[in-house]
Image (tube, rainbow, N blue to C red; front, side, top):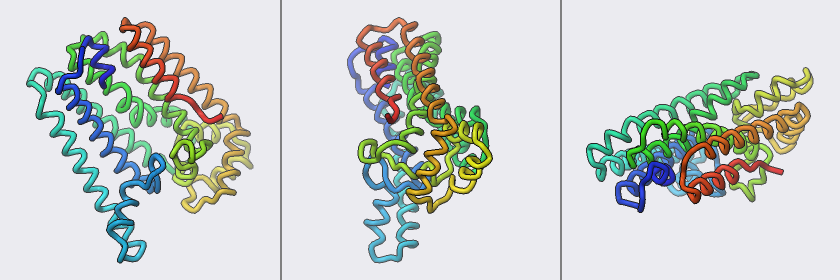
Length: 297
């Protein structure tokens, strides 16, 4: 968001910018806490997820099922509290003029995120070859709320014109999609010790990612049987995951996903070069794009 503020001509770091950035971070926390519950994820960035940590802390005297339910229930409340604090941080310091500029963008960001999450959870464990749906999930669940809208909100605080917001979208959307495509690869092929991201959760959850859609599209009958049998199995073990990874490679899905990452990253960098931004800011956004779209070797 701070980069958007700078792109719009803002200087320094006034309280309004800090508070708005904090509001976005609180919304991000809310989204991750609830996302981990929906995905039943055990870890986030190498540490226990909130619902698992609360189950361990509060449910020591309960049986595992009761402790797990208590962890989920209390984590939902923590996520709700983060969303409430996000509102408080946004509304309190902004002048009416600035609030009027950013509120429609914040509202759109929240609706887009919920829409993307809805598409994500309703498409899981449903076999399909629809890469357009998978890309739409990536756009709404990730690209809009982690890249496009924060840049828009920062720029709007600085009084940016609509033309700049459009230019920032041209950069942010392909950059965000490339990040999600890379994250999907890390979720299957990455080393959890390096990424802090589990390498079984997406396979166990049957996530409808571009990677999986491409594999289904190009799979032989035998490979499709492997996908249908193992993908989305909650108890998937290491051996089964290895078989799925072999299919993802053999169908060319991994290579095509890597190509799409490169294509969108280059598109983002081209759009970035078309913007008239101070060189240090343009360089920072370019580094962000290159760093966040790296995929496992």
